[in-house]
Amino acid sequence: MDSSLTRDLYRDIIDFAHTTPSWVQHLAELWTEAGLLLFGVLFVVAWWRSRTGGTRALALAVLAPLATAVGYVVSESLKSVVDEERPCRTVADAAASLVPCPPTGDWSFPSNHSAIAGAAAVALALAWPRIALLTVPMALLMAFSRVFVGVHYPHDVLTGLVVGALGAAVFVPVLVRPAGSLLGAMRMSRVPLVVWFTGPGSVRRAAREPRAYEPRA
Image (cartoon, rainbow, N blue to C red; front, side, top):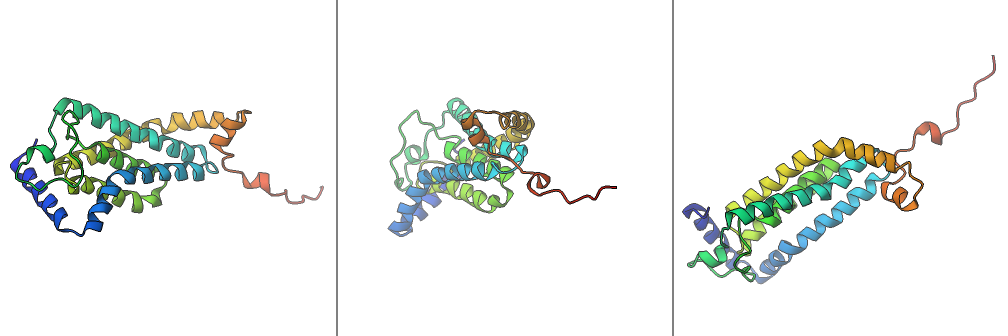
């Protein structure tokens, strides 16, 4: 998988990384890990706001982290088959990686971080369309940061993004209807914890407002 083209591109990016100010390098090191936590926060926010919506909206929000987990599993499965060594170990004439090179056996292709980011970006966008303006740039930045810090080839992160995004794009639409039916049934439960998790759902206007006075005939 490590063709001369992608090796040259990796070398150019890591060389560029070493020319940037130290605060940029530290920010990249932080983002490459902490960025995943921000996706986690967005999952919680999307679920919380969906509790007052319909069952489909709730299902989309609940399925978002599950779809991300599926993207990770697919990526990890491919990683165990391809067994590609990390560029920070194989590209001998490149500058040193900004972070410690993962040990042998922690393979490079595809990038799990990128797969998680790609899946999360798509799944969150399906549940909360406006958030795509944030999640898509986040995913792209996550993917680039993995090359910038020196632990992945460009083709690793590109494949990871595609695998994660496609996984979420297939997983969520297939399961949204049965998930919505299940969550709708859960909303009828009398168990407080279940009711809290699913939320009250949409409240019909007719139930909130008094009926108009109708004079007798």
